[in-house]
Amino acid sequence: MILLTTSRRPTRRIRTLCHDLARSIPNVVRINRGKLNLDGIAERALELKADRVIVVDRWKGGPGKINLFRVEAAGLTSVHPLMYVAGIRLQREIEAEAKAVRSLVVTTAPKNSPEVTKIAENLSNFLNFPLSSIDEAASKYQASMHVSHNASGRIQITFMLLPQMVETGPRIIISRVVWEN
Image (cartoon, rainbow, N blue to C red; front, side, top):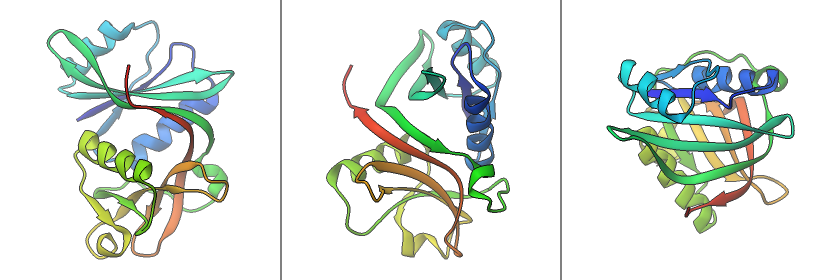
């Protein structure tokens, strides 16, 4: 199970993004962080039997970065990649009918950069979802977390219903990826 939470002072847009992610990713429990520090989040994750944590941090009033953590006895351990967010598009802005999904697969385009492949592999490992091409996934899964480049060359993560290939959102545009501490 995965625990999803926000920075300490989330904006309305960050809370909505977390709500959208909780609907789009199976086995995610979203909590309001309040005044919890990282140790408090680790304790709450253990109470909920979650072994992984996603924290959406704030930067200049919007989602700024996405931190991935594993829950261990000593607390939270950072998992790579650390993704800095350039922009988002919420489910309500995409205007497609979004529903909670039960089966998700991480997909990439057939031809993409090594960085996109590396991000997709790491997200697949962290989320415990299979990594597949979009063609193979269409017949087996209900939804896809698709990692690709957008028209401006930035990396984007978007959620789509399969096999119709309808984008349901949210869409997250990544400005920078950090692989080391």
